[in-house]
Image (cartoon, rainbow, N blue to C red):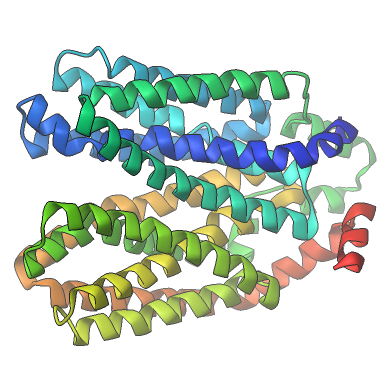
Length: 430
């Protein structure tokens, strides 16, 4: 089966990013037409927004389940379930007669979406090693943001000529068609699960080796992961705090037209793609994820300070500064959810760790939805942006606490991981 994966590796370099592109396309379709839903369904912002909040919660909580299942079942089949499920949820939005039913279905859409990322990280780790993994996971992450941009542009085009339901129909057709392609491309794969790996190791491993390849809370603590979880919460709060509330801040302070508000919503994903690309390069230079985290949180700290000082002076300055902070948060997101999980390959639980880390990211996202609004309403935007500085400082302190333990853990991981011939050849070539 490993030979089959290697044979299809060049094809999967296009197929895996397409999964994440479709994920974002089918996840953000509701948010892209939220204003049209409010108008056409004659409902309030709070009622219509329940779907976004509910999907947020179900997606974040579901990451734990998806991560756990991704190591114990065939990841390609879990991805198929996620694709078919989210495709059917989008399709049902075309026919649902009231906002209550739409909210319920969209919460289930968030749950189906959870079956995409952790199994995809595990599948990528099984297919690619060394530097190739880093390049592929970077492209996968960027393709997700490209999907977010695509759904915004699709919404602007379709809503202008048809109703908001036309976007759901279009996204559903694309998603279900891709689900069929995914099934045909992966139906003959049969990857080793955590249970089968454990049985194989049990036959030959000594008791000491068994303990070294058994993931536990003790291992997570010794690797310094507990404070990394806190950094993940802060990274999620920064990323989605900016994306959720930047249009509101711009409108309140500069009284811009609706068309320019749409433009700012597209600007943030573009900065996100930039941040992910830079993050990938920096990780390659430092050879350790936490060093890259220092750089990104430190940069976000400086940018937040500038934003706080020059608040509401120039609209484009504020957009650029927020975009750059967003780019830093996306870079940190790649480090935490895309790169760090592969350090746990020897435990056979890459998907589990990815799910846990992604869940902590979305804890921060959920907190930022209400936290930013609460700070802005009671203390103003200057205090709100000042709180981002405090969060960045706290993250840097957490990384310092984790650094020694994580570096030691990485050295142990590198000493136990044998390089494949293909990786050696690739590094010589480069």
